[in-house]
Image 1 (cartoon, one colour):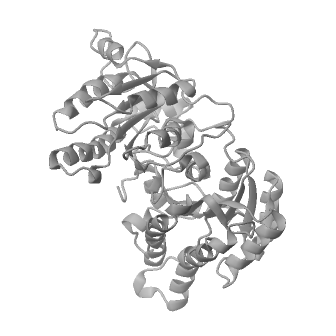
Image 2: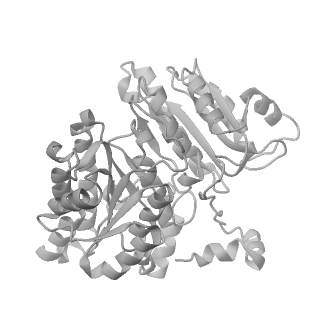
Image 3: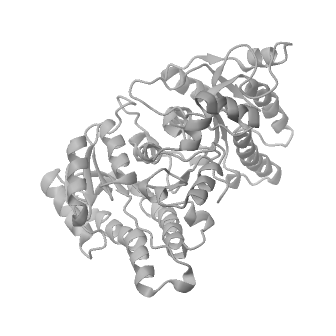
Length: 469
């Protein structure tokens, strides 16, 4: 779906008019294409208070062929008379990213060292640049001052994300003890164009055994991925991302969507499975299909199927309520129970050890929404399921995560009344709606084998929406 306002104010006479009237002009976001470099410019890599993860961060960026420059050089340039006065302005080197290790900061005074590096760097950001802070989970620290210092990073990163312009984003990684080797996948993702609509987010990374892919551009070669609700919208985009990245994708949807489902599967070279996810034996039928057609190996399960039946709660009847909860939440619980059965893991169609489950939640499940009590309940329930299930299957190396999309340009949002649709697009730090591919890229990142250190997480794909912030 086209955003005609953005088209108007970013091209031709509309651009000049918008500048004259002071109208917001959403940036054209840099999104991933095959062969694209991780960054379009050099990166500052700096550390605060010892910075134990700095060598690992430098190694990751070097392996990704990123030009790393010293923070003190950029600070000196920023203090020069030629320096600009705001993000994205001024002369000198344009930065593709700023990455700062703040994981050893333990006193409030350490935050001044962070400011001293970060503030002048903002003047040199290129369009669609990336800022990533790496800290320590506050809940892992017993000292109140240390926990307060680390929690302060969330306030800093979310505020900076709202100050940035030209499509730049800012995110925070909390790296647990021993998580250095597991840092590469989340850092690469947050720096890349794959995270175009992920902004103001906090990702926690735990210690985990990680084997980097032979090719970071095709991390799913040899893997089997099943995506529900694959016939259209988000699902169709999700399967395209997995196929692009080397996976064989099983596209699943209801029989009524059979023609569209077949078209999607044929387009990506996958297979189509017509099945109602609410069927009592859906999990068993999936396992049998995987066993018969794909050698019994299921590496990734993506729960995308979902419906809405919006009504004020006072006007919601039992059928409307039950259908939403049944599709969006109940079906996932039942399928997981079957496909995670240890008896199915060895070639019998269950999720293999070291596999991945990713569910689609929603910011409605975080903030609620008028007329969406059933939908919000189902999506909040997904978050609860993910957090509990992640702990249950951790000993098998399986990770369980969720994405929570905000306003994404789909057929569903196209049916929203114009005024409400425009509000939904603009009330985020990037000033625009996301694209289905933004959700697909985030799900694919969480599903990578190299993302073993990320589990029990809910990552919002919402451009830092002001709802549920």
